Length: 377
Image: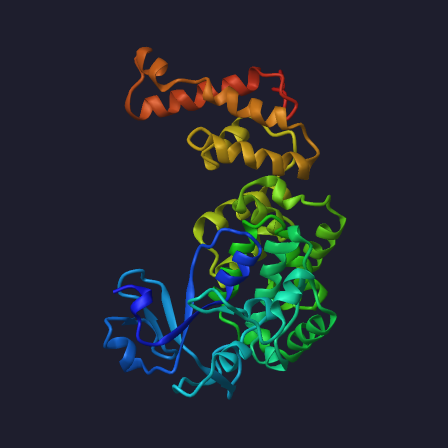
């Protein structure tokens, strides 16, 4: 069975249509089905994946097909909706519940675009504009618009003033506190990999949402830093873990650890964020050779040179030190070979201690200004 033989009307919608119009690669295709019931799709071997919403997977392509639906706000947060997905719901009614006009464009099987809310106009004018006042009913949309800004700022997109007003109203309403932390992190993490990750935080700050979304972090310091930073500072790190570490570096370690846990931050993001925070708050340069050896081991600098090299961009900027000096630290310990130590007769636990002492000696004998000189009595 192919899409052409489906016995019900279906339309390509949302991000796939938007990205195609922007000449961007299409990663996922989502479809809306009108005039059908769940049984109609199930009878054609579609697999239902949503209990609350009528979403189905195509039996071959595994693309998502959702029955056209409308939503009525009945409770708090982004989950407080009652859905109607009867066959009488039209495509235009379904598109009306979407967040932004540029995401409310559909395309039929013949390639004809259906654009009841002037999304193509806003796409051409590079405007993020809400479809209707129902935008204010879903607090997650504040976070999504911030993410879209991080992704599409490179194309010159801006938020319509009236949409920013609604986003601020949501922030002031207390509805953001009802959001699931995992959903917030999901949007945030995507933003860290986009061309302009700083836009995510700047947009949240501009609509008074940053103080709610990152309430347990030093959010005011984050906002100030990004305003003072060079343009595209965050994207220059080329690594989402380091972008996040920069965002976290002014939050002290004792405050950062519970904040990361609350935000359901994955372990690797926690690791680098904690390393930078600990370094910036509790480390005084220069350090002794032994302290550097411990720190480099904690960072797994030998095993992960690529990440370490990226990390040095961040720390050299934050500490005002030379990136070459950071690279030299790793070169010193990397020159110590376990194989050479074994040739000298070291083995077992003694081998590990011999490697450690050899690395410390290499660091002590270097002229690296980051290493504290050995005092001679």
